Image (cartoon, rainbow, N blue to C red; front, side, top):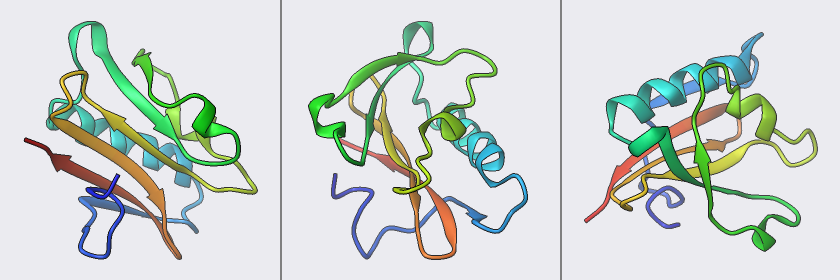
Length: 112
């Protein structure tokens, strides 16, 4: 997905990898941006795609956000880091997390 993975992309929020509760803070920042930018559809549903070994077998999956879900901690893989893309059900909003050299980036794009 070029809209979140190219050299021109700038994050809307950053969380240092060294932060003592980095994944929890990524979750908070991601949820704030997802809510503010209209990611969630009817019933708090959205599309999710993850990166890493074996992830291509799943493609996009429909996910329902529930309070306390802890998405980032559940998706983080010690050996592969944390990278995922969430897209609104209508395909107009993307809210992604990517692990960069020293921080996690939360990236938001409005499409179409």
